[in-house]
Image 1 (cartoon, helix red, strand yellow):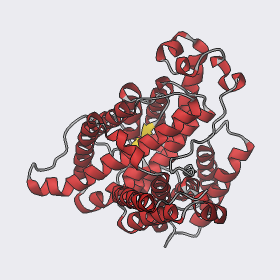
Image 2 (cartoon, one colour):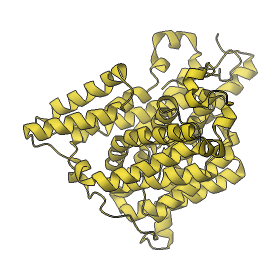
Image 3 (cartoon, helix red, strand yellow):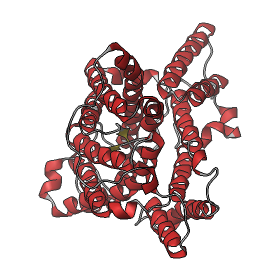
Image 4 (cartoon, one colour):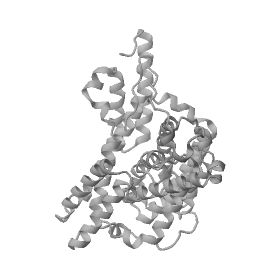
Length: 430
């Protein structure tokens, strides 16, 4: 992932995005980008409806491996992450502000909530998700999305780099003290997710890697840790309810810090994804509504015992760029397809080797990291203060696992350095 560097005035340079051609739009040729996002237009056009439906299917296939990995990262059963993604994808498609943006159980939220699950259990996690959703709704009405202009590209680079490092580090327990067969399976999975996109994008590379590696393990009879070893797979739809958490100051003190982290991390991740989709589709969207929509989706997920989430950058890009999705229909269909796949294939999902999910997560980590931020050419070109802000953000987040704290400290440091430059009459280096 690459975050644009600032130009000489200190404002982010917009990513150059070519306008889509008629061949890119396919059945949408002749429609404006805004018309292409209209649910009414999609439902009146069988060709557009087919495109949106197939985009949802492709996205749902790409969701499965990552959601399974994120569930295990958070310390909950795979079923929790899968149903969270179903509920959030459908809910956010209805109430969110960015058409075609996919919301599901996310790695950023899994990282910040894993310590709460380990210390207090899943019921406290659900309480944190519900409270985090309420906070997001409040921040949406308060106009917190406008504060994103104070989050500089350097802080964003630090955010995504920290997320990538933490995701990779979380895979270490899965490759230490395990049967020898784990290593060739993980290596094959990593090769497949790297090579497959160069051969074809008709099938999501993570999904292809899972199918091939699972088939190989089954054919050879290798005994390796499986997804089913990490928890129960779904056998029925979850029922709504409230978490079994006491309503006292001690419980609130345990839950509140994680709820704030869920809210802030989810907002930052979602608004970053929203900016990217706005640029790719040459359209504008409603940031405050998106923040409120994320809060409603988290509350809906929490009411069904979910782990919480936010916008998924990778799956959103799969929906928009590979599937051609442009409206809320494709995002909603991703949730509906995922529900069908989960209910029909849960016995198969339980036998997926953990090794291939490790490979998928390592690939996600590598593609999430902004390698341009540490490239020698970039380090010579951008001001040292920008690099310092990025490094400080990473230095705060990685040891504490607190993405929100890193963003706040990084933004404060960037603001202080900008004032210092202003007093001294300095300008950004070209």
